[in-house]
Length: 221
Image (cartoon, rainbow, N blue to C red):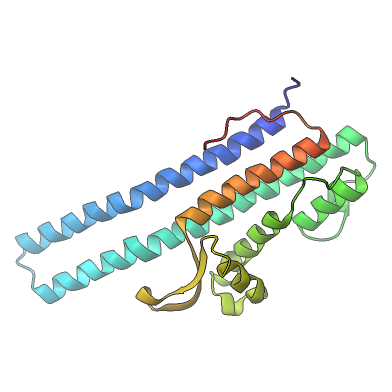
């Protein structure tokens, strides 16, 4: 087996991102429980009136059941896409060297996904067979909604596609009735875990198609 360290690095990045996300998600309810116990102790020691105690508990509920999970997942999606962009850029350089191409991917027009796809498949003539760019495009749309509109889909140029994704039962939804948020993109823990696996699978497809190394990491079942 020919070991390709770029491929090993890429697999490691996605594996570590998945572990990072899982561990941070697991801490939110633990921290929330600790904070709730602190409020209970404060209310007991200070003989706090019920109304004041109720407000404090309500604030904790918003923080640990809505704001913190949403913030974590939004930031995770942005981080994941940064890794995808970086590895795609490096992949194009690897392909350029492998095929001794005179032009660079950055010489082409379009965003990182468009340039990379054109460069790999049309310039380097790497086969499209078995390589599905759909999930990468979907991730870019979710990321752009987060970065450009803070998840407010009514302000996104991709509103129709986001609505379609939200209806596909993949862990995305729009609005949250419990927290009075009617049009903001909601991301589940499961979607974050799922999309990391999809990005790893995507890069495996390209590595295989381009003949770059062999799959190294043992994926979690």
